[in-house]
Length: 399
Image 1 (tube, rainbow, N blue to C red):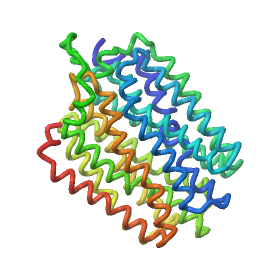
Image 2: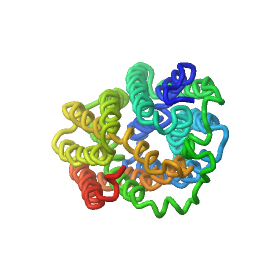
Image 3: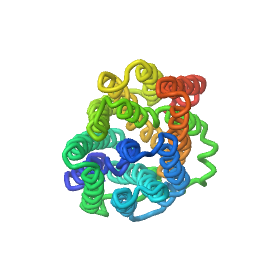
Image 4: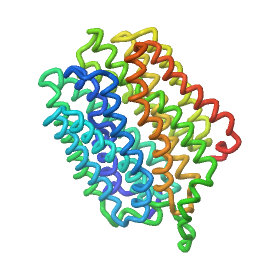
């Protein structure tokens, strides 16, 4: 195998990244306004989402380990696809608190597995030398899929209601399963997929405790946890604020926010890929943190349609940079250990602590003091991420 994969391997991979978009975010962007229109309070919405996020957080690291040891990487995409289809069906059948919570757990399990699984498949096809370029293109297709999916969801939701939105998410999950099965199993090098050295066939995987001793990864994970503690709740709360004030139709507004952000991410991920090939990932991740406090201030002053474009352009830049830089930094820092997917899972787990707590934190605070001050508070976590990243710059700049 070479660092330039053949067409038979690469196009199914790009198609997978396009259609797996809903496997990562799923019905999440729409669930808040869907439940609000059915009488749910912001705090209760945030609590249900947080329970689901915590479940995903707890299994992310073990799943990364399973993916490292698995000789069937494609299976770890099939399982998330089934979870997405199940989550969409459950939320349509019942809006009972525990039914909704269970659907969020299923969605979180899908999100926990899909990133390390596709990272492993990409490494197995392109190997370490070709990973940065192929991963950057993967992310461009992924963001394009999110953009198209959100646009279709907004249109179908406006025309036919939320049933069509959730049915579309299930359809994308089913197509993603078909796409991954089109990738030849023999095209995925299992040793390269978990990060064993390409020039050392006898290198053995290190123990899990290696992750706890890897300071650069710990700093990365903690900085991302702080960032997502603020970032994860901003878009859902922004949509809730607009709909609550009668400024927007639920599905259309949420879809617009996603389309704008994902469109920007397509371009940003390709730029990040180019920059990373010439420099390390440290400045890319630092810049990504800067946009959260700006978004918090902007959301405080402007709500509804007037703020959608600048809010989501900033989100698209920040998140687009991270989708390339974070897996790239993990893959580069753990190259030769045989534990790259476990490392991805560990970083996502710690990051998930912040993302899991964010909806409940933002929802209850907004219920107590209003949306505006909550946006400022959430944006402040971006400053904390920047401070941590700068303080340990000497540790992480080597990657």
